[in-house]
Image (cartoon, rainbow, N blue to C red):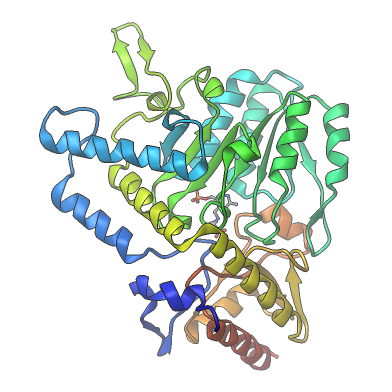
Length: 410
Ligand code: C6P
């Protein structure tokens, strides 16, 4: 008996996929930029706005009480999703970008001294690079990079211990899965080594949270960031997990309403975490929608999503390599469902526009990895990224469109 694929079981949950684009059935392969939402999330957002919406933590009336309960239950849901010790370690933000900026500003901005080191990899998204550049400039800290080599984007992890021994690294911040290379980094090992040397750790889980089981206690990271819109949830909502003992010592990132215990004309006293970091009216519907998305991912099964990603990532990379003059970036196997490539001399933007004419949604550009893409000798790559609803016949359509493009531009 053959086991039905994830797409056979769950694709119908995503109504947006059932449409034609430029006269062709849509093939959505831009999931690393943003995934689509299942009906359960769309319905929950609508239900919340129709029945429960009010501001949170402010009112004593029924709607505010209900909205507050849903918002705080969502925080608990995220904690369970990450196996975090308690909901106070979960801060709602606008997304991965804001979560990392918060740590760079509130932790590094106060803790780092001139000469201290910040360790990154060369495959970081700009969201996990620029905030560190800015704080380094501000406090006189220094950036160190783990070198990425070759088209496969390898990192020599054996150098890690020596880097910590030889340099005053105070924090290591790295991506779990590279959004350009589809490479999966050994984050638990990195955290173990960093802690041995007394450094703090931050994991950018933007590309992993919706794609695999994630356990902050097993990884033993100090901070972890992800975005709702990359795991079936709404845009404009994200998560910062922080070890409570660190969050408690951190100054707020933004200030204003609801993050205080008391205010005088001269000063203010902050609430404890996580509310200290949530100034102003939060994205209430976003948090509630995210909780529904996490329920959905657990219903599908995060192990199954991970296997499905590996399957599509590995098969797509293998089949794309068979196309003459096509260069695939990232590991040869054990990759996530992300495949970046360069076809002959065709500019990635032309290739993506061509694919779009055939109903295939890809991404072309530097993917907010400018230094890495430049290191590959390019200005841009094309990228196909898969998710739980993609089918084998969609992969066939991708391969066919690339053959047509090679002929058209050749
Ligand atoms: N990458 C992509 O197409 P935000 O925009 O805050 O939700 O996520 C930022 C971010 C941080 N880290 C990694 C590894 C990412 O992939 C992203 C977002 C998208 O690859 C948009 S550039």
